[in-house]
Image (cartoon, rainbow, N blue to C red):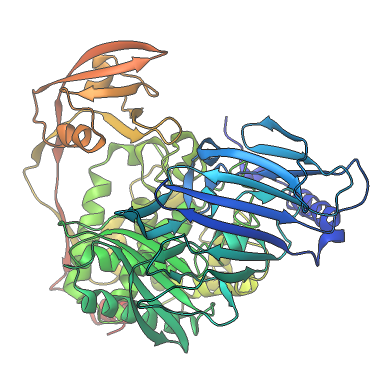
Length: 611
């Protein structure tokens, strides 16, 4: 049974944090130094961590750990599996005893040394060379940097070394630069650039793109924003992409009344191939978004979602989401809010800011409702359970086949319209979001408790809406779309008859530990269950296709009645199973304005969508 944070003692958590602070107090002013060198041809990154000002006692042991997960991505990545060549020495180069007590931990006996250095290699790194010349690289903090146990609150200095032979090597990151930073267009790039961070959490949450990339710049809310494009960006509409970023930044910083950062970096992995735009990952002062080919409304939506995360989850965060435990992943029932309501505001604020028309926003809501209402998991899993048990699914999407992104966005819609109705337009979900931002002291204080969203709604509205909240968030009841949309003079229609769509009941996912594809989930009563497939089976191939994309395409292109030859390995034993593709009825839902709208409904709609 997963750990349930509703029964966590906040006082106990604070006591643990206080104890940790005491253990590092003697080192509070001691900066931990990271020297990082990309090795492009070897596709490796070398990292050296220097810890100084140690006690002279020969009993001192310094522990280093590699994260098993990355904040914002709710799956275990077990990043230590990519580490090799670990060595330890004194500051004068004398070898020290090094032990490896568990998969994620290395221990160094300082033996009375004033300072020690731990050096290691990160394999299969995202670094590239062309004809032997280093071209570019990307560093994701938790995949790259170990931390010193009990020293995550110590300040950090990063020395990022330019790889030998690089002809053009620039750096883009939200970290604070030390000294003047030089942008090169040719000639010899600087050998080293330096950055600082107040803590490991801040350091690890600042990805770095380096080498040859394209950069555009604009200012919003008085702060510089950098649009970085790397990879194959020659066919990307750079002006449109930058305009999307600028308008999103202007709209969302205006919503909160300012920017909570010194600089912001949009990092786009680009391709010349067509792309619907993949997902992104949020950070304290940046985002990573890929893969961008065609700059379309999907890309705009991802940008708006990731930028809103600057507030919701990075600062307005559940209590367990910072400071972080990188070895024991945190459990919260509120990812539907942190992710789903972020999606709600990303697209809503795009409509308010004029990036989308009202009709385009109705179309977006139609697509989200269609997605939810055609997913049987909505009747079996609640929004909070999809959040709380995401680590069971290990997919950063939600437990039990229910996406907390989709369900959370639509819960946000229903909560917003309900609050507007119940308070006769005096209050809305904007007020709740901003009240939580004030509660967490704009991100400088501890996060909110598990029930604080509900408590804040009741406080803001002056009404007890607990039953409404529980029905939307903690039950598997259908969301009352007709009623809630009706408050704003909108109606929801379902197109008849339904369309027959192929359904396998198999939910494959990438095995982030061993690589390759595996069975993430089998829907009860489905064709996959009838075929004998089980969660955890490693998928070797489908219809002879063993490539990750080809496996997905084989399922996507299947039709009801097709036989899929599924080769798996279970417990080390290979098996071949036949999956006869089933079918399900798929309905299309449409949100549109009701022609019989009243003046009161029209007023709610205009206030909601900011006419």
